[in-house]
Amino acid sequence: MAAPTSDLGPCKKKMKSVDDTSIAPASTSSPGVTIPHPVPVLSQDILAPVPLILDKKQTSRLIKEVSSKFPLPDLLHLKRVKSQKSGNKETTIQILLCKAPSEDGRSADSGDPTENGFHFDGLGKPFLTKVAVRPAITRRQYEHCAQYWPTAFHEDKALERRLKGDFFTSEELQSIQKYMQRALQAAQHAKHTGMEPVGAVVVDPVVDEVIGVGHDLRHAGNPLHHAVMVAVDTVASSQGGGYWDHSGPGLYWKEEQSESSNDETKDVADDSSSKRTEPETAEKDIHLKDFDKRTCDISGKTEEQPNDGPYLCTGYDLYVTREPCIMCAMALVHSRIRRVFYGAPHPSGALGTRYSLHTQPNINHRYEVFKHVMLEECSTLET
Image 1 (cartoon, rainbow, N blue to C red):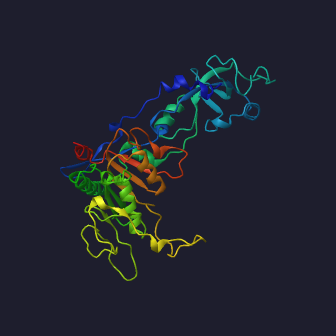
Image 2: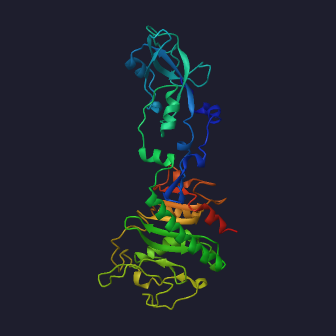
Image 3: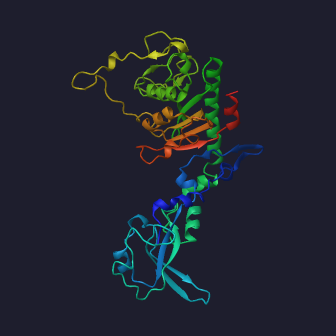
């Protein structure tokens, strides 16, 4: 028999968490140079052993009859029959019968076998055992569950590599460090100008190119100007959109491509040939762009043709020195970011510290998160 989910209280006490350091060994990219692996920020469904409930099983019964009288639709990951060798080397057959709401098995939500006309002919005495309440996600969970009752398991090799800490090659680790260093430079600029010391870089990993760089500007008159929000808007600017006018030093975005131009990038802080007609302003004067050319008529049609490029950050990676807050984490959901690498955790962080928003089952887009990239350097920014 098996206890229902209401009996998970005692099981929760047995849950453990994987120590970050146990899944993130260092990788040596070249002699004398060691680059630590970023630590994946995963759902607690992955990091904790699968919780167990109690189940009742019997011996040598037709599977068809038992499944018909006692269906287990929420336990389809379990095998209905278990073979086991006894001390005298004889093989016995045990069969999963039905759920039990408590350890004493006095009743079951699928019906009491003794009261619904079920015949125990050919079966031994029923007993209680433990089973997994949901499918195993990792091999560690599978091996733990299999000690109690056989369960189906489909290994995610990429996930197992993350948990072992060898998901990235030496070349990839060097690239991760390179882009986080760029974010650190942006954060230093923000710090020197009286802003929060946070920098963010958006990268297209396919072509290994920086698309946009932003840093914190929330003290310049707009509390929404967090580094991540500014960086996402620079990406929009690279695609011919964007809502804020980024004219300050330290900000960067890839110039929108056209048939008449072969320029690949543009730094709005240093290039005086900006396509904007208004003069450059100081950081504290960042304002909204002029949207007259993008006005809509009453039919909803715009005067400009839609951009054929990617939707905002689709397929892109973000490197940010501080763990994003809930606002920025949701902005990354909406902008369809691919992966997030951050350095220092934050008490109000939404990607591992206070929340793990990216693991929530109800959001319509998910991205991977890795923390502790250049942790010491990013943490030093706060001092």
